[in-house]
Length: 223
Image 1 (cartoon, rainbow, N blue to C red):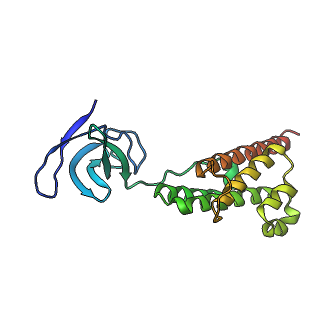
Image 2 (tube, one colour):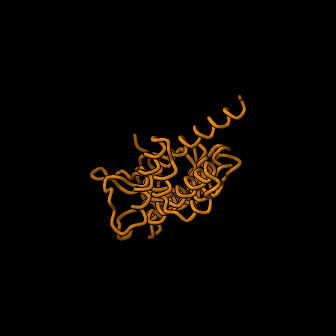
Image 3 (cartoon, rainbow, N blue to C red):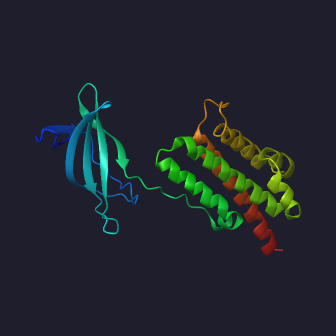
């Protein structure tokens, strides 16, 4: 089932076009809703025809305008949604354990998420790599406070090798570092992996670290 509307072109006429669907989520507040169509326009550039529909979020607390961009699919010429803008970043929530361990990790990670939401894919991966380093080093410093200054100056790979004993955390941290380094180097080593895999590995590190911190907490509380 397709939808149809009239869209104004640059000659002042408003031909009818078919498109696949209206978005069901606001890219600004990230709430699910049925946005209201305000107006539509059709244009064409070097990339081809482009149908743009202006929507208003029906959530009272938001009430923002945003644009849905549609492009035609061959061969039926039905326009398909390809982009919503503006797109605000939806921050990744972290537990209080992780926030207390490394507030810098949380801040850097969500700044990388913001870059990713703006399609700045050449720098978002670098941000995730930096976030990983703060997470791992802050965790290791908590476990080995006597060598804090040494840990701060040591390469991340060496810190993982020398100071992390849990084999599962060590494995996840090593692989996240490999992919993170790919985001900063001229030549990629892991051609079948990308930022999505890096984010999964970072979350895996977060999970293992939370397990350690929780275990230590209950060991202290229940002597």
